[in-house]
Length: 335
Image (tube, rainbow, N blue to C red):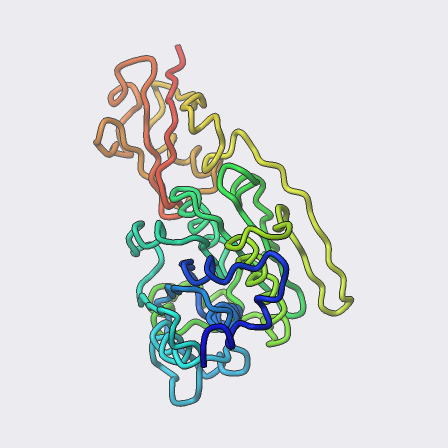
């Protein structure tokens, strides 16, 4: 079969450029329910290269909606099995898999992407991949689901609101995982397993949200149509689609111009400890357990500010596992 035959129907679409797709690279983070459908659509459409990042393993509960896996695959690497099962769909598509946590993957991999697609089921994970996309200046398509409810957001770094500009913090249950963890995630997140029950999920919503996400990725690569610049919420029970307008924030710590230009100052008291400052940073930016670095040295939490900052101002880098790149701020000592 020639490529002309394989893609003959989609090339009839006005503005379609198959050559652009053939030369494109997509980094797909998360190959679960939504990710399985996204990968299948994009490989079938003829993207040039797909890089799959997922470090989890296959559970039997995945099989009712993660169409790339079978009973014999239970316990195996999701990313590896997905890559193996996708290849026959389109032998000319280059498919790579990386069985690692997304945080451990080299930024050079993300820099390859024409589009990054995130099919993640945790709020923290979305924040991290958002900061990485902004760091490498790659368009990011994100989506999620809960039972018959789904959402999609497209982020164009420094053009549209990023995930951090106006974070739509989910309800407590929506911040939980939509599927039981595989063996790798069980090891890493045992504490969460004890308090977070698995959430309801259905294959129909997986395929619908994946369809929206794949369509946005194709439009970004081809440069056709109007991409989703805001947040789309879909209710499958009522068939209602709601678009929430998002506003890009100049004070966003990830993509804001004020941070980019190092104009934001964070006031500190010389008598407070670094630990006190860390607590305020956690509350201000929603961080996990940040470290503060000044002139290449990590500050000890027990030290007082007056002992580690000798001038009225100091440039500091805030490093946290929720961020793909450090936040750069100017610490201003009060008199």
